[in-house]
Length: 276
Image (cartoon, rainbow, N blue to C red; front, side):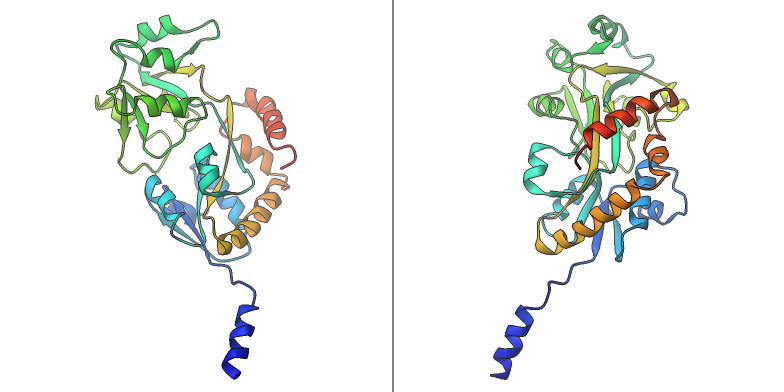
């Protein structure tokens, strides 16, 4: 009888939340630095200042990070865009980053420059669908496991088995690390955010906007779908909302964007997060 009562008492004890485990492609040392110079990590650091419980950071590849969300209670991946598939598989936090459109990048001396210039519409944008339909389509460098947007993802998936899409499977710890593949001649073009690239890097490349790219995208923590992680996510959401109420939030959010775009980006952020 004593063991039966003990079992009943244990069943009624509140579920103890697992410890937050951040599965990140960025090195764990970046999170430990007092002032990270890599903007996505810097923003995550600010959120974690308001997180009230212990956490760990583990450095993994992007595919291993998402695999970990299916097997590790308490696991979350920072700075993730939503997609239909991801919404089905994972829980998502409140948003805490806004990103601009992903763009098509080619070497400044690429033989494709003339063709790309000819394919531009009146707004200077290129249709990736039309580009990939060329008889001799370019080889695109993309990162395995990454989402590029609702319109771009199906296009890339449809060409993934063809020579027109090269999937980089090596470990990537920062945006922009696909570009050395162009310098080494492993691809003709890459899809990337340009705001994370230095002026020196941009001087080596030409950048084109795409018709199919989302103009802006929000980023979140993607988390495991289990009861323990749901409890963690509640605390993480509170930390995000507290950070978003801080006076420095707007400045940090807009930091990667050119000053001339700050007013527009802030307006878009407010519209996209209305009610969140």
